[in-house]
Length: 186
Image (tube, rainbow, N blue to C red; front, side):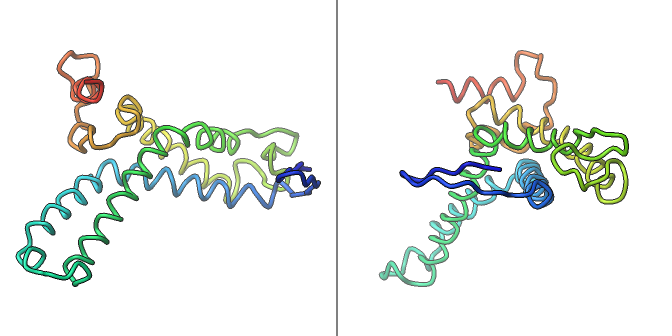
C-alpha cells in the first residue's frame, strides 16, 4: 500500500510488488548497460566530433536559411549530444543510489523456498531470476568501474574521455582519473 499526496488530494494506492519488480529491474539493467556502453564507446565524444563536423560542413556555412537541411541535421546532433551528456550526468550522480538499491533488491532473498523479498512470487536462483543475477553480477562491477571517474567530476563526462577508462591505476599521481578531477576543479 502506497500513500500518494498530490497537492491536497490524498489517496491510498495498492500496487503489488510483483508488478513493479520486473519492469523496474529491467529498466535498471537498461540504464546500467547504456551507461557502460556510452562510457566505453565514447558516444559523448562522438557527438562532439559530429557537431564540429556539421559546423565545418560547406553546406552548413553556405545555407542562408536556419531551417535548411544542414541546420536541421546540426540541431538534431546537438539535441542528441545534450541528451547523452544529461543522461551521463544523471546516471553518475542522482541515479546512483536508486540504481544500486534496485540492484540490491534483486539479490535480497528470504524464506524457505527462497523468494525475492520484494516480489514474493519470484523464486530465487532459478529461471529468470538466475539469469538476472548472472547479468547483474557481470554488469554491476563494470558499472562501478565506469562510474568512479565520472562521479569524481560530478557526472560531467566531457572531462572523462573513453581512453581514460583504460588508465585504471588511480593510485598513481599522473592517472587520467585524477587529472580529470583536477581539470574539473579548476
